[in-house]
Image (cartoon, rainbow, N blue to C red; front, side, top):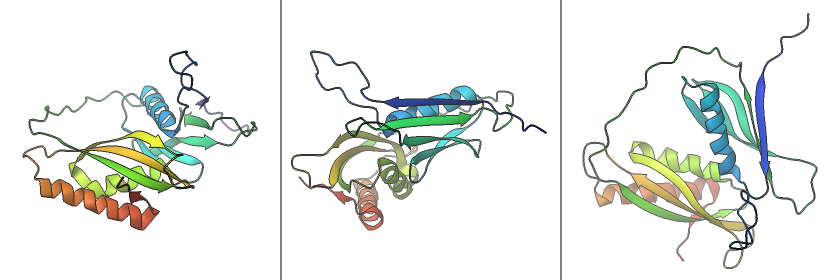
Length: 208
């Protein structure tokens, strides 16, 4: 009997995000965060009534795409036949028939927080072999339920950065839904994150 065929959707991105322009000769290139965003958007469109999560993977699999607890695809760093000067390639693939589609369920809404947020900018020095996804996972694990959002807003390697390393800057937003956070709480969480990053990944906080 011929096996049942499944329907998949896939995409590949590489190179500059935008065309070269006289106002900016060098445009930023696609990276792992672009493919994460595309994976989230594609999965949300394919399964509009489900809960979509991206789970950090390993090796060339940057993230596994989870829909209602089922792995339906992955976001990948791709190895392709390309010149050595070519920019990295990233891809996403989703099995559209991995789970049964169910009727749309009502969404739960939360009230707009009335308590103030606390933002911490964390500059890190990471070995080139450590991915941003690995750092993301450790920060979220150690920050706990007070972490409202986490954003990588800068990545740099070159002058002033040790060979084999790169600098990454993260914005962490902390908030308690019912009270104002104390400085000691945020400082304690941040110190815990820095200690875990160094112990687990060899990632250090930049002091200059």
